[in-house]
Length: 137
Image 1 (tube, rainbow, N blue to C red):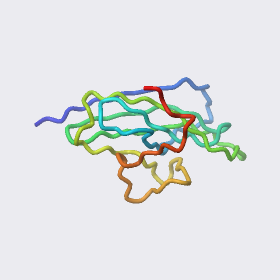
Image 2 (image 1 turned 30 degrees about the vertical axis):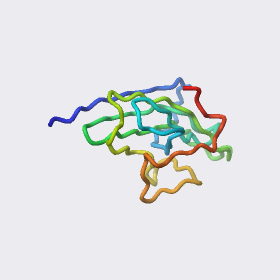
Image 3 (image 1 turned 60 degrees about the vertical axis):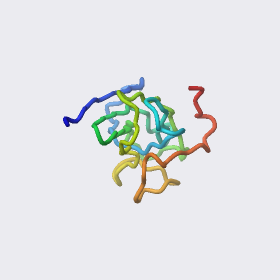
Image 4 (image 1 turned 45 degrees about the horizontal axis):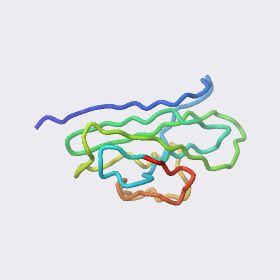
């Protein structure tokens, strides 16, 4: 059976910064991802040095991979705040039994310090402890 591949780009408005570097960042679910639509919380890091860039969603018959990106300004000093952004994901087909991948940023990416990064199952990585980001959907 041929794999169905679809890419969904969800972009956010951000000020263009010529010194910014695009890096992959952590994300987690804010709710169950059993259906076709769900929300993810993207770790955006320092509010004065990073900004959300986009989600890239790739689907196949067996997997759904979501990659989150931020633009990070290369500065000597950044605020130590811990910021997030809620993003809506709409799949071409319900997640069903497909494996959900991509929630952990690589070591050279932007990693949330209070989340595990070893042997992570993305579909089980649900955080409901951030009430300000909960969606009405």
